[in-house]
Length: 254
Image 1 (cartoon, rainbow, N blue to C red):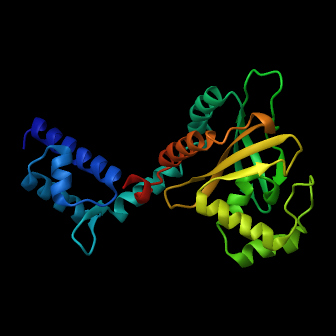
Image 2: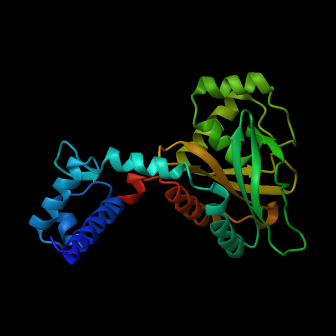
C-alpha cells in the first residue's frame, strides 16, 4: 500500500470515529451516509477497528465507540491539566455573562476553588483561589452530593450537622437530599444566597473519560443580576470541558 493510500485510510478511519462520537450509536447505513464513504469501505474499516477494540457493536448491530478507545482516552486524560483546559472556556463564559466564573474540585466534605476568572465590574463576586466551602451551601457541592446515594447524603448531614451560613442554607437532611436529587435530575444547580447573602450561583459538573464527576464549573453573581438563561451557556461550557477530559455522553450526542 502506498503512503498516500495509507494516509487516506487513516483519514477515513478518523472520519468514521468522529461520526460515531457525534451519533453515539449508529448503523452502517447512517455512518456511510454521514461520512460519504461507500458502505463496503466503511464496513471494512469498522471491522478492523472492531478487531482492535476501538469500535463495538451492540445487540442490534449498531456501532459505538469501543472500550479500547475509551482506555486510551482515560490514559490521555491523566495527563490533561484541568485548569489549563478550563481557562479559555471560563474566559469566554465570563465575557458572555460579565460575571465571575469558578472552577472547583471536591475534597472530602468541601469544595475548593482552584481557578477563577473575574469581570471588570466594580461590583462583582470574587472567590479566593484556595478557599473552601461546605458542599451543601454551594451549587456545585449539591450536585456532587447528588452523585451519591441517599445514605451517602444523610451521612454527610450527620457528619457535618449542616451548619447554616445564611437563613437560606438547607439545614434539614431530608430536604437536602431532595434538593440534590432535583439538581441531579436537571443537570445543574442554583445557590440561592445559601452561602452568602446577596450572592447567587449556578453550577454544573465536569466529568472525565470514566464518567466520574471530577470538578465543577459555576457562575457567581450578585443575586439580582443572575439570569436563568445562563444555565444553557454554562452547560455548554461544562460539556466542552468534559469532552476535553475525554468524557463522551451518548445521550447528548444522540
